[in-house]
Image 1 (cartoon, rainbow, N blue to C red):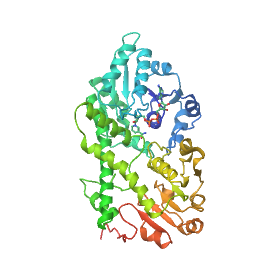
Image 2: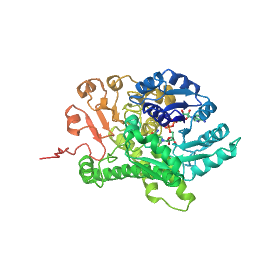
Image 3: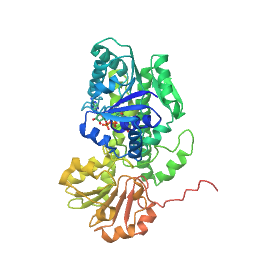
Image 4: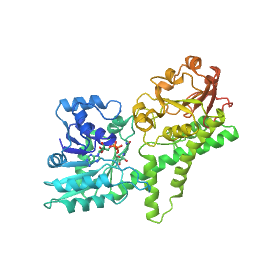
Length: 444
Ligand SMILES: NC(=O)c1ccc[n+]([C@@H]2O[C@H](COP(=O)([O-])OP(=O)(O)OC[C@H]3O[C@@H](n4cnc5c(N)ncnc54)[C@H](O)[C@@H]3O)[C@@H](O)[C@H]2O)c1
């Protein structure tokens, strides 16, 4: 059993801390947000993540998991300290490292013996050295310590499963001893562990996200061409994805990527490139293509439902992907603003993210409690997040309540023929409304 603290109880810190407790460690979760900590003590999760509250309850009850705002107590009572605070984008595109730095200062200040400080936040290459320096400068007494980079690859919505069954665990460290402690910590997961130097570990995270983001932008660009030449992007990406060298993941055309990671991480990587005189042209293009994709969705809707002024738009799904309440950098935010600026009335329904959206849009839009309430008297329905409950919409019922039967499927969730057969005028990405959708036969 290891004594572990996790500083930051957001998506990453909360999942990491809770799951480390589940595999038998003694874990203290720390946050500056008192409200979050009070809720967590009562097993109330501040985030929507399937399965998290059961795990919280079990591990708190069994005494392996505690929460505090007192970082001094946490540092003094643990030998492995994870830093899992946010690294949001600055207006310049660089990562804001102030939270990681301020935690490093306090870790140094309260250190009372040998500690391994593990950076789980996504940080620019070289941050391990900066954290080391900050800790040394803030120690009241000189204690030995090691800074390890252990980037996180969890996906919101399947974060717990991703913790227990990761494709790989990356441990960046200078010393054999720290590597061994981290290997022992993760041994129960039985997953491949790759030990690297600290800078390579930091780079693996940025390069992985940039690659995945590029894959999405690539397929979106091909989707635009499919539409012009009369091909169907769904069939094209299925055919491409069957090639093991390509694989089907992140090959789904849509409204482009959002979320708290890809947009900020590729901006930060581009900045790191600039600071080192390396032009990351491919990454820049992926970023540019992503912004264009949102615009493209909007202008397609504008053409479909012309003129937009005074129209009521119903948006199905606003979280940046299904199974999360996270709306950070979600395409829905820009698209909602553009509708409002065209003089539209906007109503949204998301299974869990309505309240998050309300924090941005307050009373400037309406919030529905289900798809039918959303659809009442709208001129266009726009599916932006492919939540499971949107995969089997009752189009007959929806058709009976809408004002005009336009359906824009920005996630290519439906067979166009199916929606059209229910009396809707349908459009999607890279297929065009008129293109017949062929059947995919995998084995015959
Ligand atoms: N969310 C993801 O899917 C994901 C995946 C992989 C990596 N990451 C990276 O992990 C890091 C954390 O991301 P997140 O989504 O969990 O962020 P988050 O914003 O959900 O959570 C950060 C938490 O840190 C707390 N915090 C801030 N300053 C603090 C301090 N001084 N002491 C204690 N707590 C403090 C905040 O109150 C908040 O609860 C980021 O660098 C992110 O890029 C995120």
